[in-house]
Image (cartoon, helix red, strand yellow):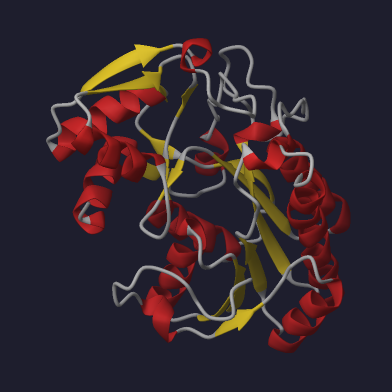
Length: 304
């Protein structure tokens, strides 16, 4: 199979390219920068072809993808700065990337009869209640601009294509880029105490593990909506921080606070990010390892 991957300068795109290289697939990566930008760790991605692409440029998207003629596109590129997306002068740019760019890719995939895998988010739901969200639930009520535009991307894919996977993920961490673990370990090294919210509940997703699952999916025709995070149970951000501090050996005190007490965030955050992943097993896919195990492996690789 031949793959085209967007957003390879991000956490997930980087790991997807490495997974493709491990399996011996042809993979072409893209991002908006002129040259590949990522961790200098000798990863296989440095040996994979890279093309600069602005996914909001419809003609450029058509030209690049039709020339490559992939069997599958894994669309990782997105505007993910959740708070900045709320700025009045950023809203249309966010929509152009998350909705318009996704539509551009879907249109070309339809034209060349190519599979498309789109990464979405728990933010397409309203984050209320305590029941895990089902992958085929259509009760969409995004709380913020990021969630709304990612939902518009979902709809662009599902209304344009038949050969698609829409995979919702949450609480992502990986080697290539910023994430909650990196940020909080750096803070913990210089503070005696940190405050972390304990009323937002979900499960982390390690991009190294997720990349394997995404390639597994593209090898099949088991199309549709899926949820994918690591196993290990539902937790709060506070629980998450306590565990990776423990594994790292930090003695910094982690104080639980409510979202209201924490303040700061411009964009509303979902309280309930529980994603039901049972459809993965039902369709024959191997679940991701536990998040506790993922944290252990990540900390060894990241060398923070």
